Picture: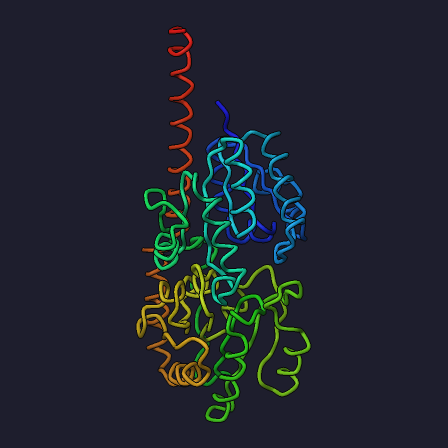
Length: 388
């Protein structure tokens, strides 16, 4: 029986940071896993997960038709050669072009729509094109996973996915053994510290965070504001490093660059902030809550799934630095005991709703269903042959 699984995503980094538990689980069940992605400094680490790596040249943020057609041809060639039991797609282009190639080869597809990104946030002609591509590529999928109910509803109402195969996951899940509670710093030991973790993109609300920091510092000059994450210069939605350095020089915030391990930085923070415009389910908030940190996030799809307003953090209005600043001032004014309770609530919420084992179990069930269907087809073939 064929037990090959092909997983495709835009970067190897994505697999190492968000899908490692799933890859290990699949390998542990005896599946032969291949990851197709662009190469980066995490590609060499995929072997440690027990899977193979296939380099895939991809213009992840571009919209050049000839390059996208070339990407579709690459997917078809690889999938035709491997002939896997199932194809698992993540991020826009692997979901669209990988699925189209798999459909053409009658390979079952499991998609993961992990947030809709700037294309859906900023409605344009490109939004219409992407919707058409999603409608075409998802039409035969065995399962389409969404990371929040809002995105699922949007796709169903727009006719982009079939209701009977559309399901919701708790984001990419969180490894509760890796992200464990960290003690809060004692009051008065240092200035209150806010931290935003994420790529330096406009739709992550980085500009609003900087503007809110200026407002907060007028009332609480001792508060510190930090940014942690990569500057993605290839992304049209990216903030430039020069812009971030200008904030630093003005004393607005500190830029901590990127890291492969956010835990030491989260442990040193008093509150994690994400003023995003829209998310699937933001992993940075899952990490923060798992480490028992209170959080502040916007009242938008994805973020509101993680924040119980007033219980493990606060929700604020999107694109509103003033409201964000007010919530930050409120958070900084809470007693240490109240913030500890918020952290405990967040950790409990992660254990009950966002444990990565919930995600892994749903994927294993979807793949086992595909395997069962394929097995039944094989068993029926002799009966058809004997009747000829």
